[in-house]
Amino acid sequence: MDSTLSCVNNGGSVSLIRLDHVPQLEVETPLSTEALSALFYWQARPGETLTVIDPEATAYRARITSLDPEHAACVPFQRLTAPVESLLRIEVYQSLPDKERFELVLQKLTELGVTRIVPLESQHSATLEERDARQKKSHRWPEVIRKASRQCRRAMLPELLPVHTFTEALACAGSAELKLMLYEGDVSWSFKEGIGSFKPQSVALLIGPEGGFSQDEVEQAQAEAFLPVNLGPRILRTETAAIVAAALVQSYLGDLG
Image 1 (cartoon, rainbow, N blue to C red):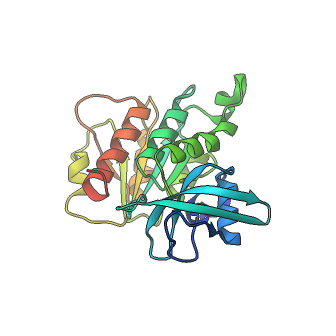
Image 2 (cartoon, rainbow, N blue to C red):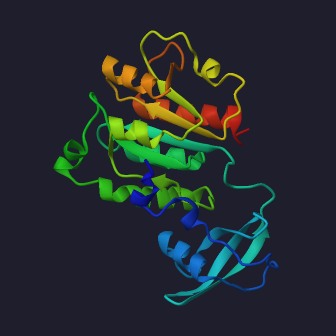
């Protein structure tokens, strides 16, 4: 399933602000139509500082000096010594938690360099209808990602997909090279053992709700090549589990630390 077409926040590669050439620092640089579209996805304003990328994949901090529907320009003022986007593609499939905890998950996964975030409804999770019954909050999710991306100086907005069913989420993760399912039941694999010596370029993490996954869901995920793993002897809240798992993957296989 190619769910990039249904991305609700215009995240991913389309949100990269690309320069047409290697810039000179402190020299105003005109931006292309493609970059202008990316600025729109960031809801950028003149005077704002964002991260831009040149054709050699070098990142810069740049100040937006002009922006209108047909023209934009920036002044790059700092060349960054390391890539701000991880070479490891991390996808997190998060069972919907109660209340506003999903907003915390969105914020922290963005800071950790996650590429794609997919909320899902599992057997024991909250539903989108339940979450929005008292006060609609899901419309705020793209803005949470934008703010977090600005704060941590990312060059790209993580993709946020619509709420999926459990089956849809498994299909969406189909192309990931390594698939790990956090499971509170009896499993023989620790998180570290689940990664082993494998060096994948893409990892899918499946995070359960407070009540955990049902046995049917575990079996369904295993049939789709997900390996059930645990994060140790203590039971973590679902939002803690998502953040810890993403941090461990980034540490073991990506650019963290």
